[in-house]
Image (tube, rainbow, N blue to C red):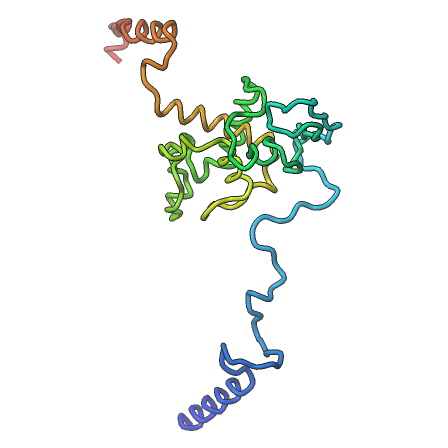
Length: 241
């Protein structure tokens, strides 16, 4: 009985090899695949492509675009070029605001008013999109690193602190190394808001006392010099309990 089992097993193996062949064998015929190879699966790697004629939740409908003034604008736009300044806007132009480039070089500067609203937006978007890998202080110690993603860069590194804002914008847009592209997920305005917040994080983690305004430094020194208030002694009833 055991001999018959081995004979059937051998014949079945020969039939399978004869029908399916060896992987890597060159042939002009269409291969027989019990399980389709990954290169022929009808799937999209990475984030799904945005559905046409839909609006992401939480964003406003596009507003009329503004015309650039005749002179070169602070954003680096060419004269007469249309600028996109809507919350839903993705990269559509060739100016600094949409590409991070001023001519052939990476530019520096935030082409949006840097105010409390922009910083709050940048903090919110950074914590949602970036902190998973880079950490809440941009030190490269996010939760993803604790689970094996060891190639996360710290944004507190001297190289990145000296990197042009436009190059960071391009990295967010197109990705770099193991970092995926966020150009189809994060609108242009939010990318600049994130960069503004990252610059604030970098400054907060790499600053000296001389960088603090004198009036604010005096407040800090006054707070540190203030003795701690003594705690009230417990009542006799509390001691008995």
